[in-house]
Image (cartoon, one colour):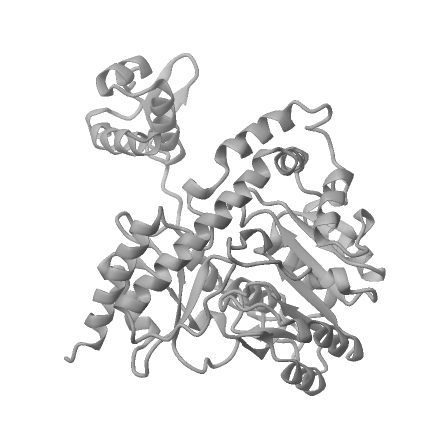
Length: 479
């Protein structure tokens, strides 16, 4: 039995048993629990720690675990005043700041037990380099000075590694280490656009970026994407119409469409932004999740930029673990100092042990092996999902099959709503992602996004599509 399932079962049993004990009464010893349930001492320790975190037990070193006493009931307060405080910006022409995380939590929240996760945004644990990360963290912790204060910009060796991965003439001095891609994007938006300003975004695009923009009081303006990335003529029109000074894009395996910016559009996009006196924020989030059949990848836009137009965001998170939040923010010119200042004010620095662990990981032989394994597995999973959809759900439109990333973007037939299909899918035991949160304005049609990376393997993909077919039939069934 897996350790995690043993812990869950023990926690469930102990919750039921707690009613037999009075508040403050001692529970059976750890040794007794080990012998009674035939589990390891680690399992017992984790189960008691979870109950302690829930406030149901109290552990006392050397004495054991005791049933917690009920907390004193605090008087109910009146928080209605916050509605006025949170909505009063004080400047009439500012765009109201709203913090809507619903589009992000769909891919972050774990589905209920028994529900297959075709909505996830991260690698399944079986694809994560857990042993390599654990070994890297252990080695990092033993490095001299590993627990001291790092340079504010990040460890020089890690900045150099990210600079080499970007390529071109980008150097270590152009790179800041940030705590994950989301944090880096937040820093970039705050640095480049004042509250109330428009910011051009791909349509559709990553909901987390839209949430960041709106939380900062910015106004996302959509620019349509097709199979070859953002459409340059519409980008130029949007710059002229809005006076925007920022365009946020994902040129490689765009989320959610999987599109790659075409070679003839790359230089055009940079030229259009330069003529508008604007920055391009390049979110290069899944470069390391390329599929085995992809062929050579285009360089990051930042590698071909000599004028400081591109603000580059690159991350290790998608290729490792949601908790391995190490990223790079690269820029040139005066904007780099502004980015650095905002990051320092917000978070001081990324914890040094995590930076040291990142260096250990990417410098180990396990790193290229892991990337090759993931590359092959993602290709297999993508092909399995495409095959299953074409056999079982011919009614949906799959306009583009990507050669990188972790998702497919599907257009639903006329009359089938995202809300109804998502709810029916959950009832059928599969979690999917509705398309509406990916649009900053009215969507042209109903869409869903399916992930093939967050499940255990091709068997779960086939079963997930089978359940989705059942949900689809429920939705289209008359009356």
